[in-house]
Amino acid sequence: MATDIRPAAVAVGADTPPKPPRRPRSSRRARRAAATGWLYAAPTALFVLLVFIVPLGLVLQMSGSDWPLLSGNRGPNLPENFVDAVDHRLFWQSIGFTLTYTVITTVLLIALGLGLALLVQESTRWKSILRTSFLVPSALGLASASLLFYVLYSPYAGPFADLMSAWGFTFLGTPEGALWSTVFLIVWRYAGFYMLLMLVGLQGIPDEVYEAARIDGASRWQTFRGITLPLLRPTLALTVVLCVTGSLLAFEQFYILTKGGPDNSTMTIVQLIYNVAFQGQNNLGIAAALSVIVLLALIVINIFQLRFFRSADES
Image 1 (tube, rainbow, N blue to C red):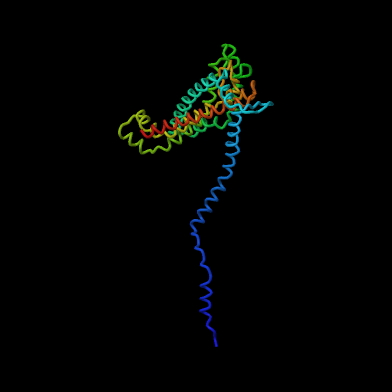
Image 2 (spheres, rainbow, N blue to C red):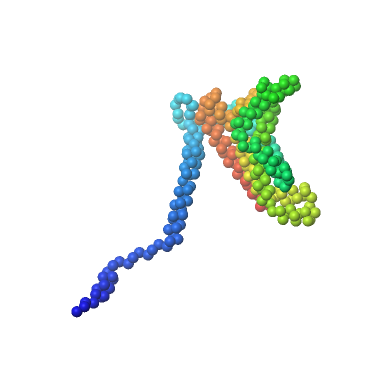
């Protein structure tokens, strides 16, 4: 006689706990995508931590401590470092020269970069050659370019040595000559780079806007002032921020060409930090305090520039 086991099976099934609901596949895919994103971002985060965060923390620690370069006791020295940094005999002179140099290079590079971009924007047979020739100096390192111009400016081995001796002129022998010789180097080195940035911004302006302006009878100057400049404002904001930041942190060109001379007339704030840390005082604490002051000044200047351009865009 066959035995019916279905009720027993039902009874056993009733005693087993219910299975937990399965999580949707979308949540698992989201977690997997997040883990993949963190995995890709980990090398960059590690690089930023080792190259920026850790040195910044060390600089902040050094700025509040008595930190000799070679030997000596290291202890807290928080207010004195900043007071000694501001009271340095070349502090305000280096700031004044750095600001003067920044204004000159920013105006020249923005104007020349925009002019070169407008020149090579037109579809002519020489467009590719001009773009390449203007951009080639940007491929040369700043230190290498400074050494090249140091030889060109040399009154002994340079190609203009005889001419300079006949006229009694030296490129780097006077404060004005040293400043403008360095400015010429920077303009030659970076004009092509800023031309490329401006050219990208110009190519982003629709051609239909220019065609509508030509139909309305607008002249070239009216088109440039009413269409090109307003639509190019984001690119101009980027170039101004880059140029101002790079000029305020100028070091290599002056260190190689002038060493801050003659008579400390071309001493930039970054070169002053170098001299305080490794020449003369050999005090890393005061140099770190100067670095913190420069960092805070850069943050304030960049915030002001971004707010200025943002308010101009809103208006």
